[in-house]
Length: 471
Image (cartoon, rainbow, N blue to C red; front, side):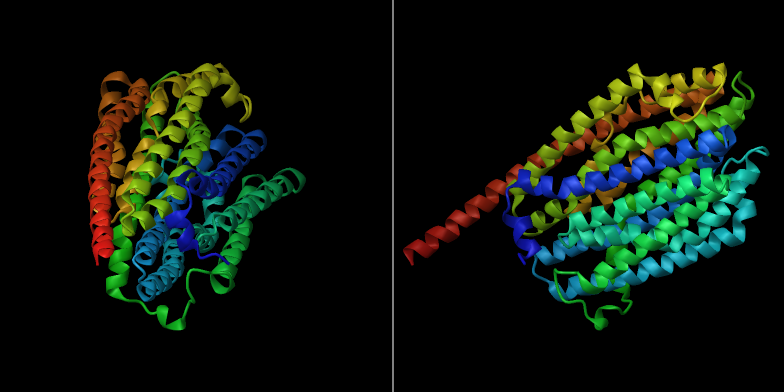
């Protein structure tokens, strides 16, 4: 079997990125499609209140993803850098500590949610009419949290091991199981929103088992030893430092989801739409946008091992070429999303069940205004992931937090005071545009630095070669 490190350092960038991106994109797209299908099933069986309930529960999913990214990205980013520098023992300790953290984090979050569920629901924006559905859904899905975190974080480690296809298979298996069980539990057994929750945790358990199988018997970068599974403070600190950027990005997203839900219900109650319609529509639109974001994140995640390894190996020209290729692909994805959301808003929303005139009116406004600058999305996670991959997590943190915390959150809080619920809609495109300007400046600087490093590296190699010739 060819060593995955040889592929990362020598295979042509286009082919290498394609080999990593296709499985990652398929996995991300499959997960996004599942979320869409799940929402369609709930919307057509339970109705508007069911859609609103899943939107209330979505911050919990975001919290799970945040912990998964902290551990999964932190572990995989360090693995690639350490393997690029031929430090196998240190890489093994990083992997062992990452696996232990997956288990501890999952159990801790599950217990925290179960013991505080009644207090969480109102905070997350549940209205009295939505409360029973949200309580049922979150109570059941909470038991799947440890499996969700283990499978999600573990997939990053599997991808870093040079097995993106296996990581893709894990996601697809989970998605197919979830969709099939959704249909059986909701429509055949008539279990309503509880059926969707049970389908979710069963699929999460099975995918976690597959991840455990890979890590136990299929890992190929090095031999995993028992001595690696000892918690070491310095290893955990390094792991968290590299994974904190995407983790904080997700936590900021969770915070925004909570603020957004509460703002939509508050300002919606004083508008012609009421409080439940904006809450339900927000969840639907976020799921639709997630389809395109999953494509973008698939590209970004697949580039991480390539960027990290080649930067660690001082192959800066390959790093630059990888970045440039990612920018081109992400730009095409963004353009497609912009055309669909601006030209077909009613058709998109109609998939999730029927509604009244006010429902469709607000849905079309939300899609067209809130996602007006979707064409600029995707470059921010690429920029943040780049700085993370090259060992500059502080830059990654600032990039990932700039849009949500520094720009969007203040706009969501301030604009509705003057514009009502429409202020929430306009906060989206304004934040997207400002964040894009920041990312453009940082990426331009990154490309310049890579050019300088690549030329310096070529000069050093030529000098070494000349010394060898004249010896």
